[in-house]
Every structure is written in C-alpha cells, then in structure tokens.
Image 1 (cartoon, helix red, strand yellow):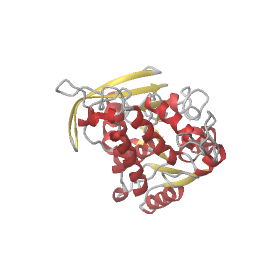
Image 2: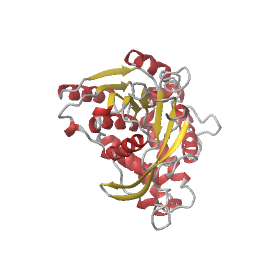
Image 3: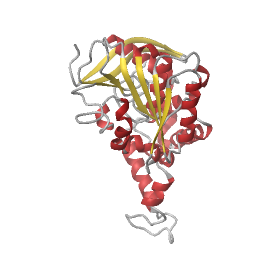
Image 4: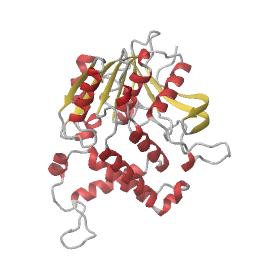
Length: 344
C-alpha cells in the first residue's frame, strides 16, 4: 500500500520518443490519500502549462481537505509532465554527455507525456483511474488518456480544452516562444540564468488569452498605472493593465524554465485527436467550456463534445459561467466544483 502525501521519483529507464531516445527518464509523482486496489477512488489531475505534481498547491478548491476531491475519500495523483521543470526529466536534466539537455531536449507530444505517466503509475501498482481531470494542457492530457488508455480510465473531464489547438492559439504560442528567443540572455537556449525579460514578455502575451476582455475592462479600463506615472505625457509610463502584465511576467519568470516553456507550448500546438475519434472507447467524457475563454472558445469545446458524441463516445458538454475567461478553472474553483459535483 502506498503511503499518503508522498513524492515519488519513478525511474523508467530509456524512453523512445518520436524525436529521439531520452535515457534515464524520471517522473515526479505526488500522491495524496490511499488508492484502493480497484482504482475506484483514484483521481489523476494532470497539470496545465505552469503546474507541477503538487496538485493541492495549484488547484485548491478542487483537490485537498474539504475540496471536491478530498484525500480523506479520494486518492489524488499529480505527475510533473515529461519536459517539465518540477522534478520530471526535462531540459534542465543532465543528458548523456554530462551537460544539461537545454535546447537539445526533443520535441514531446501530449500523447507521449501520457504514455510515460501510464508507465510511472503502473510501476507504482496503479493500473486503474476512476477520474482523470485537467484544465488547458491538463485537459488535453485527460482527453489523451481517454483515447490512448481508455480501458484504464472511467471518466475524463476536459476543462478549457478540446481535441486540437486552433491556428490563432498556435500563433500566440509561437509569438511567446519568439519573445523568449529574442532575449539576449536566452543564448539560443544555453543560458546560465533565466532570460527574465523574454519569459516575462511571453507570459504577458499569454495572459491576453487567459483572462477575458470583460475582466480586463472591469479591472483596468484605460486608467494609468496604480504605481504611478502618466501615459498621456510619457511613452515610458504605463496604463494600469500594462503594470498588471509586467507584474505577472516578473512573477512567472521566477518559477518557470524557458526551455520547458518552449517544449510544453509546442506540445500544445501539436495536439490533435480529431482523426482518432474512431473507434469509440469506454471512457465517459465531459467537456467543460468557459465563458469569455479566448484560448479555447466555449463554442469550439461544445463542438468537440458533439463531434466525439457523434463518433460513439459517451460525451457531454457543460458551461462554466465566469468573468475570468480561460483562467477560471484555477480562479473559480468553488463554482467549478459546484458544476461538477453531481458527476463525482
């Protein structure tokens, strides 16, 4: 029996990816609660772009004491994705030549992330998952689990994501990666210290899709920066929304690895399961759209639910009303929990 509240570094040996072999792959797995032998109480929560295996640290209200998934009742599992920077093998890890992988780390797909997650869980004796639930990139992983390992998953809940990334979002990810690459400190990916300016600008670009237009207008409108300055007089002075984006960018640069950001956003770009709907699998699918989401528009998520349902899957759609837009799956956990409570 696995102990509660434990981080596991699961060693998988060499892993063959579509773009090369990665030796000595490690998956950082965090487990809250105790799994039943039949997996009936096991919830796997794959993380979004900037998350980690520590689910209760970034998804309070959904996972943790008194939350939708309480470890007194559920066994909650998180895994840092392959290519990540919070314990699993990624660009910061040491390559066979004794140097960090850096920009040489191979391109990774969401399906490959899920495959190594499956191997890590099997090594820990966990073969069955009652629920896989995630938002954004985590939602893509949840859908990939249903498609690739459906016999092991009872219910996949896909929040703020669908079965592919549309061209506008791919373009936005590309601009964010370009912002990082243009920072002189990036040094073609061989930086010794994080390229803070590039990461901050990448985060600012992304934030334009993470929050809704209505929320920006409500919070900031066209007011000058609350920290001071007059944008009507000096081009270097900022509006309040500029100050907010600069603050978010600085915080982000303190906790993210630039090469990891590039790897994970490319995985998002490559994700496309539209041609893999048939044959239908046994996993129940719930797609959740979010009002004001400018990364995965709710009408596109609803269309995906209809597409998978027409393909023979038990797929349904729910809408989360929110002023937050895409970030609502993190910012409005009470409302999200209420929306999902009858499914659990």
